[in-house]
Length: 332
Image (cartoon, rainbow, N blue to C red; front, side, top):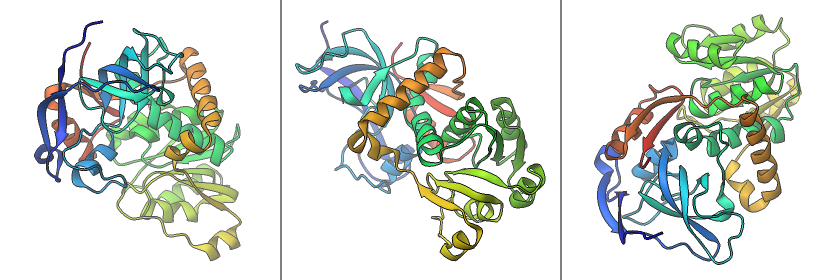
């Protein structure tokens, strides 16, 4: 396949909000290294880490100028000399900083085949959200069928993934959302009970729904007041999974309360697994592929924008008004 020498790419040229930080430029197409695949990017899922990268607030701080974008679906157009698991033409999805461009070179270990049942837009947001949810629920919390699962931000990208996987595992899911509009989305995703933040007292609502049993597992990507409420309605031997702190306040662990109420607080940094336990990543990918093939994986796409409008996609994501994924269409 003959490839052009240059491509369009969005680059962060100065730190700030996406609309100010991003510049659409023409740069050289990357070359696949020995263990990499070169992808023609088809779709990129907007993620909050992209916003943090633009602001210079992410834990990884690339040197300016750099290409953001952390999650994609693409078509393999070249393979490195050491790559034998993919061929030109394969449709794959994966994660790496630097994919908000027309082409991207990605380690072969960081991509996997897209289930045929998923569109590019649906698949573009599977790698991070669904693997995060899978590791949080199954590896860190050992969620069991019949248990009560409380999911904060249940209409967001990773929250919806946790709801879908909780339902698939046979859990009884309680979702916390920020509006009545998002409540409808959470119910459609399979939440048995939906709590609207600001309208309902979370702890009281959970206790009422569970006949005072409480939540066996809490999936918390929000932190702050959401975490505090979770500690008030966690069940005996319950597990709170700390996934992030999108609410702006990092969870503060009340060790004395953990001891007295006999529950666990566990952390989840999904990004460590590919380097520390790649075998578990393979297990997660196989499980998610089976769920997709069985029709039990239902990624929700809020809206799709063309490549030229990528800054607007990140702006809408940062505003917190979206449901599920915002997707940037790069090629078809």
